[in-house]
Image (cartoon, rainbow, N blue to C red; front, side, top):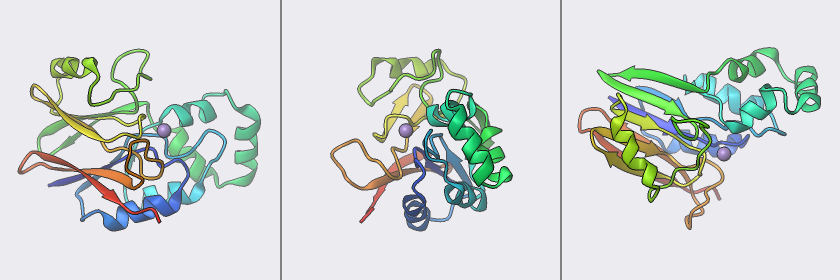
Length: 192
Ligand SMILES: [Mn+2]
């Protein structure tokens, strides 16, 4: 089975469309948070995620919007956008366990450990700690810099950002995991 992993769309539906068009067909689609921005809700992005059957969690941007730190804008969102679009992200958890083809997968936005908002890169020393987790795959986002790292039996996958890459590559990014070959790969696609 094939698992598609996306993250950090940041209210940019055209980038999400590109990612989904570029992606081979998948059996499971995971979104590691920051589908929107705290000051920019995007019903079109949410609709695309729902149509694609994406399993979503909240990132730090959803936490700000739905967690009460931006009440004026949230009020405006409720007056402007469809309730079901808002509810879809508001109801998303901060982390989520998913099973696919017998594999245990953890989906988080930043880090699996408190305070959960650490930026984890491919050179981060904390990556060794992922080997202690009872999962086969941990998907995270937050940095907008994609990587794949094998920490013992745990494959750590950051798919980067669909819309706002923060590495040297100006293209959008997503990841694919093949449960048959156990191979994780990062894919890049043009945003132009
Ligand atoms: Mn982000």
